[in-house]
Length: 89
Image (cartoon, helix red, strand yellow):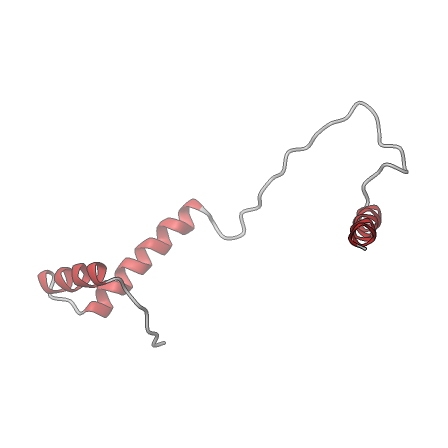
């Protein structure tokens, strides 16, 4: 695949110099740099790695009226939106 990228002049110059000193074309040098960078990133943040949220234990279960179900969150957001509209009027 072909693509065009804009490089800052200083970075482009460094890439050209490195390419000349290693007898390689700029596109080969850029490909190596991107591949190495993506490899480092994938090691630090593997694809498919799940974030585990902390589980907070409570002494007692929530009262059903206070439980934050998706429906309850929707109701709360709708109430806040209606209050905002009423206050703006």
